[in-house]
Image (cartoon, rainbow over all chains, first blue to last red; front, side, top):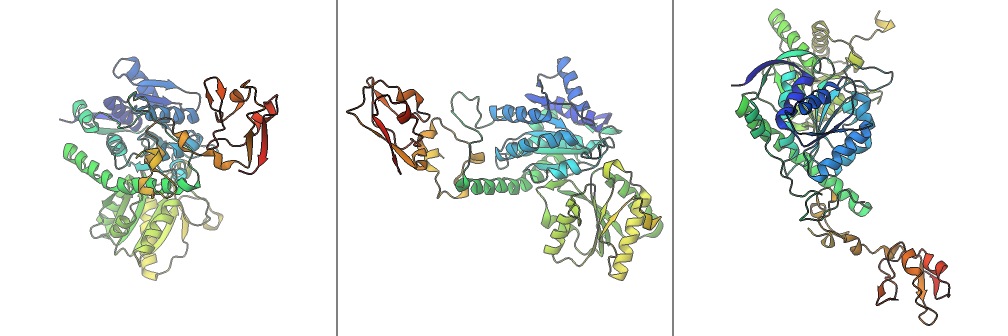
Length: 398
Length: 98
């Protein structure tokens, strides 16, 4: 029987780490992810796990030490947020190009500046080109479940890529919810023992990691890395299927909520999906309007064709970004989903919203307005404003 | 896949994962001598076998056999000219080109 608990998102991730008992965790504290290494350090101090905790002087060192440990043959991980991840920037690319199956517990927080400690996706979206697999969660349950699936994906020989398990700062990381935990023995059996084929501390095989690659080799290396990301799609689904047969909880590249007959869809990542679901239930109950949600779980690799297929036949779509990329056009999710729709020759009217930057709240009423706008766009076949904000104080609208 | 089997004509499928190398001393396979723009020449007549040139060579390209230096390892000599500078007997001269 699964264990019934009530935990915050940070506690849930720390609990998953305890069940996995990884070999090495170098970490440096940063709000709102600090609790994760704190809980792990407590487990170690209490003798519950024998993970080697490395106290480092910065996140640059945290990721460097994680890379070193992983190359040596250890199952390694770290946790961070926001500017902490920005300081890992250089090493994120190294971890991916060295094909190391590292897991990073990321608690999404806005990047400075202005300095802000609340949830948005600018940290992980800024790292979207680093070569890491990115898996996002709506709830504590999802981030726990995703974390248990991370190593089986990363360590699969067709993948060998680092994985970022993302949750929204404070909303998920500090909000306490009911949760179902997998029993220890089952969790351990699911994640399995790590047995790397090649590793630096293997006395039977001499080895070098991360050599210089001149222009005659760099491009081939990047192509091989791309292949690993392509392979990850199948592995992510295989691991999800195995997880479902253990827990009954189903995961894929995204969740389709009330999409079976939907005409108006919202595409979103993370905790705000819960608020959107409440709006959907309210709208459907009060008006019968066919509104639905596509909640992206896997952003890297980007499931382009699958997203386009799921959005097929929609009259209008709102893509919701919780980070800016200052193209002065779309946000990152907006750009990629629109590209997917274009390739699939979609005829839906599309609008891109910015919401929740730096932790700005988003409400059921806000989502009701988005759906109302979608209905208007579909009726008039015009998109008055392609890029919109939710909750922005604007003189022209006051 | 051994390092010696990977070359500039290898397709991406034959490059090792993350460029990892699963053996030691593969730098021997890499002919850094191709980078050379000037070349040291060794005059056996003038050489007194003091061996001062050997430890200063940054590329270990002056082999020593039975206590005496031998011909340059031109596969790896980058032509830096330190050996010519350090030789007290003018037994090493630098010639332009490979």
